[in-house]
View 1 (cartoon, rainbow over the protein chains, first blue to last red):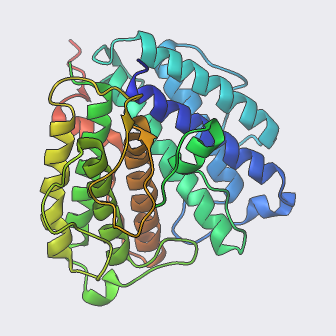
View 2: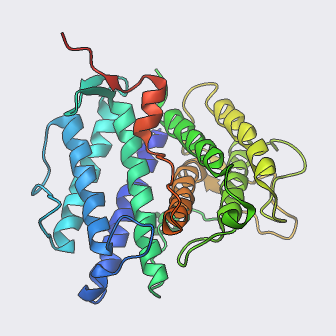
Length: 162
Length: 174
């Protein structure tokens, strides 16, 4: 029996990959689009999303997967997609093997647990993907479906609306 | 040990509850704000989040949480929406009352289905995962709407939730 959190993490990785693939097909100038109330430009949001997940996995494992994503350096969307896929796979492995109650110290001096960081990873991904799709929608571009129903269709399960 | 999925869902309920509380002081006009590219008004989106949460739980539990069902229409006020959050919280706890769920369990129907609607079968992990995605998705839209109109949104990340629970705290170095 697969853990229920396993599915949440798989969806997270799939949705980010789907969004990045979609954005790779856009006119590159659209990556500078933004919308009021969101994180920043479409590109900045995507980079932040992947960079944060890279950091979460570093927090949990001490491993920096792929080139370090820094806020002031621009990567190609292909690079971001590659890192996002590898980071997602590592997060999945952590969820399957680590103790969610294991406590560790973060760089700001606070302590946290594996479970908290994994929960934040999921929240963070959903939040910023929504901002990215809002930017697309508000600039007249129909965003790709990244709901779990769309994921279900992609992996061949049943579906439901809402 | 708190099951990681239960922790995820508890954060979800906490975040929705916190967002509703944050919206309490808003005027009726502010609750009707929206921005292009999002689901709709603040109020309508909140209703959509909570009614959908109930819908996912009804399918997963196989029973109605209460009658009548809390559906998307007609539009209701913030008090009504808030009154359904305890139903969601209770449903989440019932779901994990006997440990982890079998995500591969096939749910054959939902008691929330209207007679004219098609019946869908799905593995339990699908509505469970959608619960998490959906809440985060629409809360982020509301936060975008608030920000776009000059209203500071609440911090709904897992960090403040964990701080409240003591699961994340300032280390006592000596």
